[in-house]
Image 1: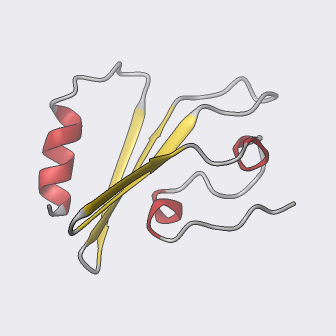
Image 2: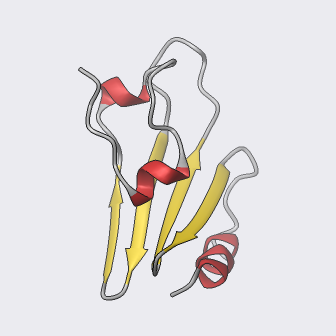
Length: 86
């Protein structure tokens, strides 16, 4: 599955417009970020997915990574997950 195919698949889900989506292809893998704007205080709601030949992984990063100001809310983190900062 390539980046264009993953974009079409995500678009076909008809997600709420408040859900921001990012898709990035790299070296035969495709990363996906789905997120919604947080309130600036609590852990933000987002998830990551990685599609590669023969495997699809979907996960919600640890709460500490989803706190405002922490790193990780990027589609690049779906391709190469960052370790928890704490």
